[in-house]
Amino acid sequence: MENHAYPYVITVSSEKGGVGKTTLATNLAIFLRALHEELPVSIFSFDNHFSVDKMFEFKGQAPRGSVADLLMETPGCDLLHTGQYGINYIPSSTALGDLKGAIRSPMTLARLLAQSRIPGVLIIDTRPDLDILTQNALYAADRVLIPVKDMPSLENCRNIFETFDKRGLDKKSLSLIPCLIDERIKFDGPFRDQKSLLRAYAVNRGYRCLSTFISKSPKVESLNTNPDGRIYPILTHARGTDVHGQFAELARTILDDISATIEPRALLFNQWQTAETDRKKAEFFGRLSGVKRECLFCGRPAGNGSTGYFFETSDGGASGFLDTDCFDSFLTTNIYGIGTEQAASPAAQMVRDVARESVFVCRPVANGSGQQVEFSRLKRDGSPLQRKDFPVKEFEGGFLSRERSKLHLLMTETLAGLDSGFRDGVLFIHPVNPQEPDAILEEERYREFARLKRKIMEQLPARP
Image (tube, rainbow, N blue to C red; front, side):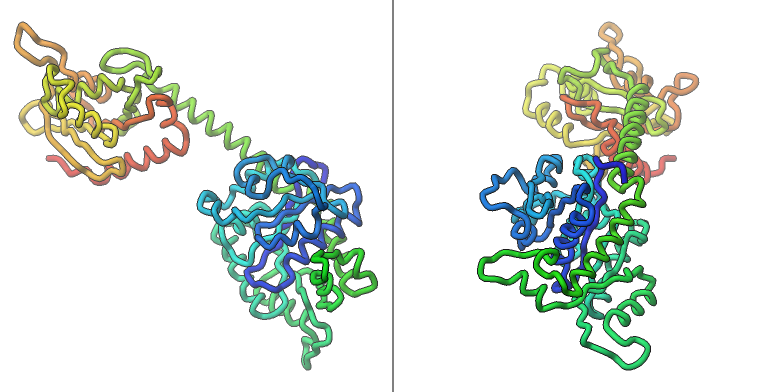
């Protein structure tokens, strides 16, 4: 693997506790580093038992962030601490529970790791559940190791595989590994021991199972329990045991996978993200290029904190921005009949306040009484509030005081049709942030606006 700026990610995960998950993660890191001294190896944990920290930290080392900071967008390379045995680690955190609610996408970690500049290999230890953080660790991984020690832990694997199925992800990255296998236990019949039985059941369910396994060992268990509270590695403190050889075999298998991986998932995600960003920019500027920048009422350009509304027709034939004061004046005077001399009245102020929390819809109607417009006010979620028909005249007032009708101007500038009529369509008017009116054209917000338009169109009553 040549793309050292993008880590090859190994996630160790199981919903069943007590299967040797953290022991597997920490010792695999040490064996990988021992067998390939030039390969940078890093590790962090989404669990809060701080075993990773106890294994690798140097006493007195000044902390500079934790895995919680990674989730809050701090680049991963800036959080790596130099640890014992040549392993870098990101310190654990007790604040992860408070962050879960803010992590909405299961692909957040994939994005963060694609930007992390963490070199070499990164191992992620997870909690014994499928919460949003575990899902993130699973989806970001090039290789997922799922330790199983008995039938209950094997049955729990089904949830991980089903999670991948639901998102349409390739399950080739998922590998079961029998752990804590007591080789003293023997069976009669075709499956003579635990590992053979677990492998057979795994294959029968369509799961990939590694050929190596990790034995149960009192010697290894003692490395985690001692008077000084340290956690000692198998590499240096369990030489001569079967487990030592098994970890070496597992590490060699993983190194072969790493060598065969030309483009790790973090790199592929970065490439996709770059392409997606370019696509979003192109679509954003495409939408922006077709938008009328000057207010239909006063002709002033959008911006400078004065633009408060965005409009678009159902057929996409017209779109643009409206000045806040212009549209508020149109509402108070032309729709609610509040005279200009009452512009500072409580009633006018209430109309302006309500408008910021509303969506407006204009639809031409024909009912035998000349051109009319059905004007509706709805909640921001599309729920209807008010609806009324208004005649559309080009001029308002008496002969000597006639002025151009704002409603007529709004409709002709957006839904003009043939022979001075209006085409069949609907005009939507939505409030925007005056400080960044163009933001409504960004992908996520525009998608929400498009969904709202569809919802409103579906619920508009039929007209004769």
